[in-house]
Amino acid sequence: MSFQGKVVIVTGATGNLGRAVVQRFASEGARLVLVDRNAEAIEKYVTEAGIRDYLPSITDAGNPESVEAMIAAVEQKYGQIDVLAHTVGGYDAGKAVHEAGSLEVYEKMMNLNVRPIYVLAGRVARYMVEKGAPGKIVVVLARAALKGGKGSGAYTASKAAALRVVESMAAELRDMGINVNGVAPSIIDTPLNRKDMPNADFEKWVKPAQLADAIAFLASDAAHAVHGTMLEVYGRA
Image 1 (cartoon, rainbow, N blue to C red):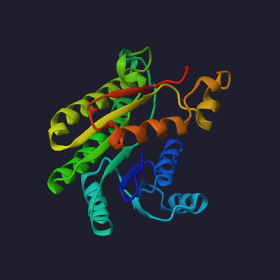
Image 2 (image 1 turned 45 degrees about the vertical axis):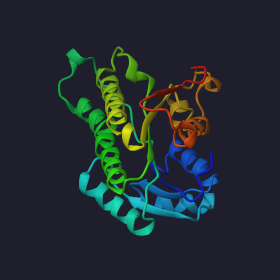
Image 3 (image 1 turned 90 degrees about the horizontal axis):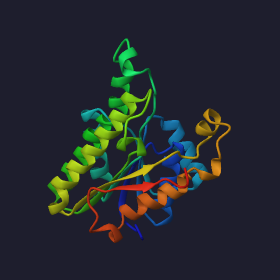
């Protein structure tokens, strides 16, 4: 799965999962576009990781103008986009639907888990179509997309909506040489999750590097015939 010379955009590049994804693609020779909201965090990370061929981008993934500016910068520096790996997302349980006094949590989850996919992945796909070039788009989804749960109506609804966007884009783009797929973790082994669930068996959780491997597969030529899947990467959780 060599990505030598390919241009790979990674969102949430300095997060726990984002760093693992960046390292995975860097190890295969990719030229990286590191999307994050913190310029200092990007510079600190690339220095620590020894990443040399990269373009930092302070981008709001849910803002069309910000995304267009990022794509223009990538075009100017590299002249192509081969892969988008979107790792941004979040969780907020909120209250039971009938107890919610406002739409704050609902709107937060939709703006965090759905809007960036619709905006960022949509515009990257448009760029690929206009260039007439094949490409891969891989989105981090969640097992929660498959079923609602007590006290998590807004979150599970947002993840289900995200999956529907990915599936729709896959159907729209597969005849244009663009593969759109998702990976779905169960619980990712991060410091925050360990803090929030101190009594859990961490060894059952999915490691960021394991998810990065799955993302790399879907971004590779080996997944040329795969469209619209949600690859389950649950570990033993």
